[in-house]
Image (cartoon, rainbow, N blue to C red; front, side, top):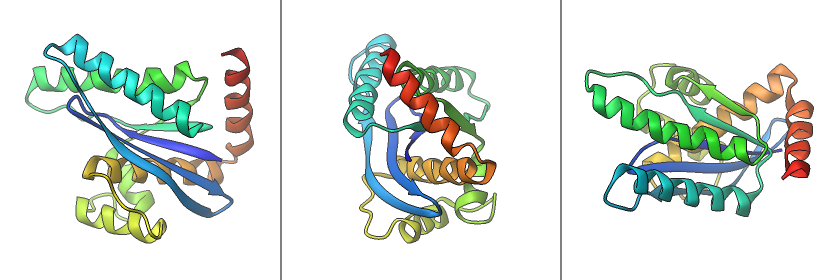
Length: 173
């Protein structure tokens, strides 16, 4: 099963695609969508176009997005939430079910510690996906999200159902 992980951001939206066969994981691709434009609507639209192209090119069967945490900057949190909306909408538009995970859940799945540092997450992503060349820290986070979702699908027995939903979604499109 091919899984895309998405790390939402308004300036930089990281993405990573892996192939999961049983317990084996293989890196497919990773990158960063950079928003373009002067106003918020243009920036969101550019992210949507880029993410749509990534999904069309790599054909994932499942998607996962990181939950956004709320901080003291309300305006910044709201803008990040709008970028997260793009990260949820574009895979759903492609007929994919989208999993959502808290940062601590992702870290626990990849590192074994929900309070792991970013450097530890990147190190474990490289260990689990040998030979991977990380496009950016955001792309590394996105690969960690994809790994977390692949583990969740396998352990919960949702693998076959996710593939069937993806195929049905593609048939409708």
